[in-house]
Length: 291
Image 1: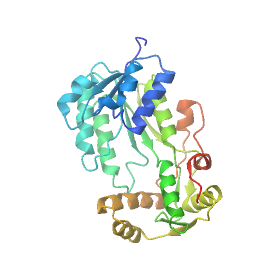
Image 2: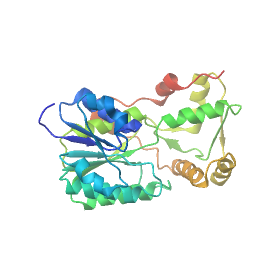
Image 3: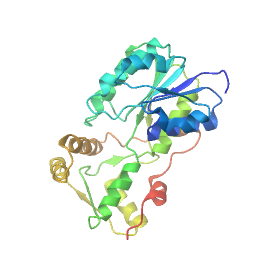
């Protein structure tokens, strides 16, 4: 690899992180560092020249050496609900100490104005990065289109009933692939200022729209059944989900109902040079047909 900027991806054994690394290998000639709590899972990437390093955000002392030598760092938000602010702040501190010049962070659409229960942790992380003095890119990802596969598959198993508390709200669903493509491109570019980018799909769709797509693609009639937020949360708990998870799911629905997820941006195309994937195309390729 070349002697250009060294790029680092945290959480590289996760689906998003791994895909970002793979894209960098395909398109970039620079050095790549991938950090993870499970280096063995990235043995194949190490064989392709990636510098795989152990790092745990719960072990701050492990981060300084893990981040050493990186010029640009992609901080992928962890999945530890309630612990992420502490974890992310430790990562930001270590990045600054290691001399990282630019931090990119996978945040949440409308992070600073949303009822989503994850919002405060994302805002706290953005604030920590902004206060660090390092230049930054906040990638405010919208809801993954992949969540629709689970929702529609479940609807197929429930007599075609698609339950949601989104009302008539719309969401500009974006695929994980487009998020990875955007993150890879932003990490590899030379931008050294401060920017906040909304990473969205090409159109905003309501649950009525999703039901229609599920009907046409899945070969089974799907009907959208709107529910009050409290009722949906109660149903999820009765189905066996922890209350915190039920509250998280319904908070996303509330955000959609309030119009916090319907913005369509050009960021994916601006960064990658190609248009993001339409939900209809994604579902056609990934939604199982009903039996």
